[in-house]
Length: 637
Image (cartoon, rainbow, N blue to C red; front, side, top):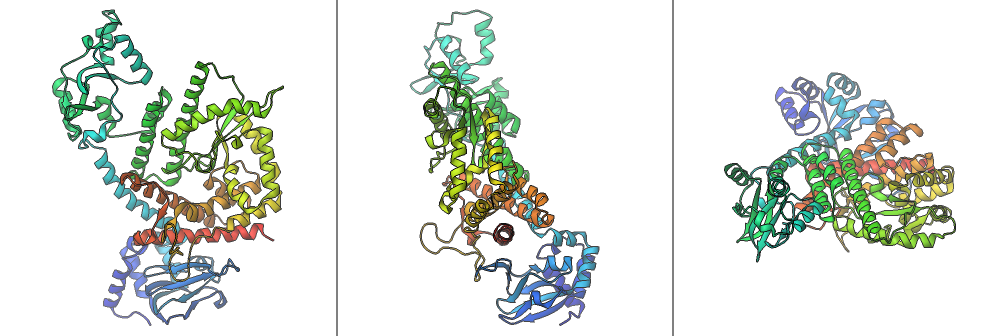
């Protein structure tokens, strides 16, 4: 049925404008499209398009109803549904652009009306409209860009609210106040301030602040007069204090500093000291930057300072979301800062061990595993780490391990205090199973490779993502070179890895967008890590191992696979963009959980998502299915 009158054409234009990419097209191009559309009707269950019909001849836009597209790429999968198309969604892009038959069979799930455009007009519209052409060639990318704009707008507003001079002082205070008694010797106060890296000390008497001493006072009141350092600090303190309540706003503190010529404001609740706000804190309100955090981490002298840096990293993630930073650079920033924090913890614990004179220098390397090894950490991440060491002559691995384990335990405990929970599975350097000599690591990998049962591979997969973090990094590089030589041409092992990976199919169903469990723990939810991220991570890892690549990141592995295995670049980019969307989705979800003081998790109920996020999540699962099909084709025989 052809569209006839001008009024009907205009109604079609308005209907199309509600959906991407038509909402961004030039009016004349949209008018041109509407004038050439026809309307087709398909009864429930009726075939709309199939590979047997030959080269695709029409472009379809769902006007009303729902279309199911089932792809034959996974022949043994009864639930290989890859498309569930609703109002405003289009098909088939790839077949029309490539002038080939479709690879999916499309049927009406219910009574369906579709706008239909002849193939010649489709190609002409691609030439006319850059917006339409870009959408057709990069449809997942365009959906993600549109979603990113929405997310940026949401986070920009909340970031402005959270980091402004209208913030309450309770949100500005960065740490618990460091206090002393009025009679504390000056020498002890100076030593404490130096050790803790703080700029002020408050004297309290029964919880009430009575004086403040700052670094600015050191020159005029201590160094130049050359006073007796054993005298009580109260004699050198400023006792004219300015105190505000936790509910007072940041701009009130700034005004008080200007009015009284102060650099510090005390925050007190019913007279009791709860914090100190410095001039520096107010400047920092507007920006928590990479350089600021990295400088603070490198200069940290104690665990308390590093705890604050952990919080700053999470605040930075929020700010970057507001600025529209994508998932790939964002997770790399988070992982890089977490690396710095971990390295500083290791350095401090080594210093402590040497000071206690119970440490003998050992040639070792701290290994980052799992998501940290892939530079893909989000806000919800536990510890995955290990140690590789050299066994000196006349020593045994057990002897060296016994010296390293107390250090590793202290490091793991400190990381936990900074916001990285202890691994429930015990994959930590403090576990003797993962504090090994190079020879022991090679033997462990050899057993996994030779045995390769699914349960063993499932537990061991994150170990294949190791990278060096601290110490003698050459040990890790040597282990990687050995492992690549062991795995690269081992088709049997790679096939076992593939079988293990294919056991985790993205949960798409025939009757609804997602296949959800109705009973048991967490019913009606999806795990964005297991169901969404893991299929991409597993596939990318296998391609990298098969190619002997030293890459550990999922996106870098996929891009390298595109070159090594001569894959379609557009298809590979769709996998990469899909993986990054799920990563961004996880970051958004976890930030919401932090803001709501909820337990961090990767679970989401798709029924609670908006239409755009449901649609994109469905598309990313579709891309994961396609990637698994390619993986199956390459490595099973």
